[in-house]
Image (cartoon, rainbow, N blue to C red; front, side, top):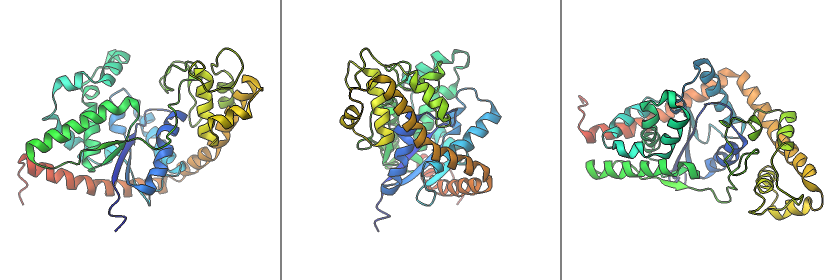
Length: 335
């Protein structure tokens, strides 16, 4: 009975390159905790990835690597559904139907469309504009009640909610209207090591600005040693010390130490000691994850079996919703 009452939660991550420790802290690590409380669907969002040009062989490699990372971080395919988005055709099928209740002005106003259009001016494609409708389909297909969101995704969830309400009003109750899920104590947003006023991003032109889940220990420590700090040498969390505050947040995320515990630990020790300690804490925490991911990638048969099983479970859940949608809009089934 308790199992049946679990709320459905959906989230997806793009396999469009390296996964940063910001992605790990803000999303993937929370997925592990959420699988105990909710009925979770976790997707590798390869359909979303191709809105920006991808090298096909690299995309395939990154897709499998991300699926392996999910499992290496502790996502359990016995407790939740792990699958590759393109393995479930209903995502694209529902997108087409939802396009008929979506207005061009809504999509052209999306912040991410504007940002990506500016960044990829040579490839402003319809997929880039239609991205939020595909994201809405991802969520609504599984009747998700909850979607973990960061500040940069709130606008996408709002349009998902708008489309669900609009469709329900036009055709009758069909979709669950999802709510944003903000994990308790989810921690601070992880900022760039080179510019703590910006979010850490793998697309940063400066490779020292971000740390990836695949960086080796020497690389991690070097990047933290080069991290921008602030004037003075006091390890203190404060608005006027964004660089040090970001490092304190990262240290806390990987050691479990509170801000006050960290400040006390490094009292009178200066930035050099602190940056080295942060680098070592991150490297030591990532080492077992990296080893498990490498082991899984060598066992392709097992990975494929997990993804096949996940796609079958996702297909069944998605087909239930899509069949209902098709009936509502008037498609003839022949049954």
